[in-house]
Length: 392
Image 1 (tube, rainbow, N blue to C red):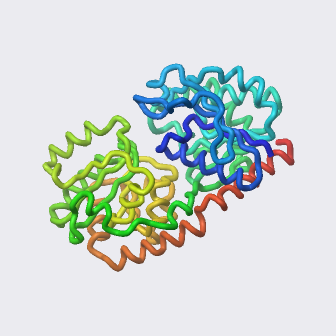
Image 2: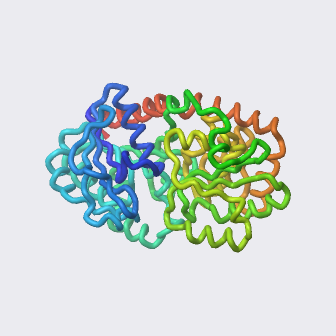
Image 3: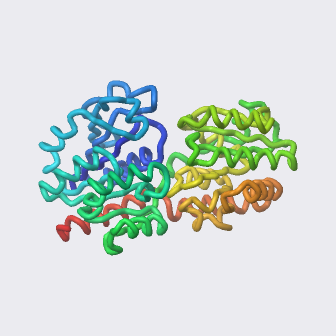
């Protein structure tokens, strides 16, 4: 098949769940023998674009077409205005057998939807957790849906939900159950075959073996709940003296607020900010952490949890994470979104070495059995085949 993946962000940008998921899906589809083209933009972050990205590049067997955003600052805030997208889509889209939209509410989706309908090309929509209107920018989302969104959903051959909870969100938006396929995200297991030795991160930050490490590794954004984490950590540090909180990840506008909160709680010296971690540096953090904590206010399918699993690191997440039902008492703990429960869960985890080892082993097994990209790619391939064979 000739497949078009549409994703507003793409490597060499190094962060963002949708970015990484789109890239790994494209790789897995190439390995299955399909021709894969990607439409994306040149946004990297608030202050930078992907250098020399405009045009078509070859990456892991994919043809990646980068469109330059008119205003990078708006694109970094998820308002993508790609130049020449209409011109290219108008002439190229008829060449594809199936289209995969990896974003729901964006100009890319509006334009690609229009020409997909014009040329009768089936498309699959994957919202990556953004289909709900009840959280963040709810009014703007409802306006978008009234003008474009409902039609984009209605005309999709299939929609992909990461979890059963996201499937229910699609249903509330009027998508029939027969159109919904549940396919989880995955990770590239080859990246976790030769893990760093324990102790490398500790040596870098001069932490001894007696100090416990709590790791937060994701975007520093209010949605991710870092404020709840530091408040819970402040309570925990009253019970355990030798404990450090490592906050790793790119600032998504919330870092100044978080640092102010740390100062108010008088725990600045117990918290380490590493900035974004990639590659081996990221793996060193997972390997040395005693527990990985994701205190999100809302989360559909956090890849960081799967990465922690692959490194044998137990996790604590809130019950607002869509993957909570997979985790609970299997590879970690799930708690309500409040300070006391999160603090108690971290204390329990840090106090029980045997339970941490048990959770770590179960997590490693779980991710290899259910969440590797080879299996995920095959599931998505079946979704495409169903669309193209039935002309849906």
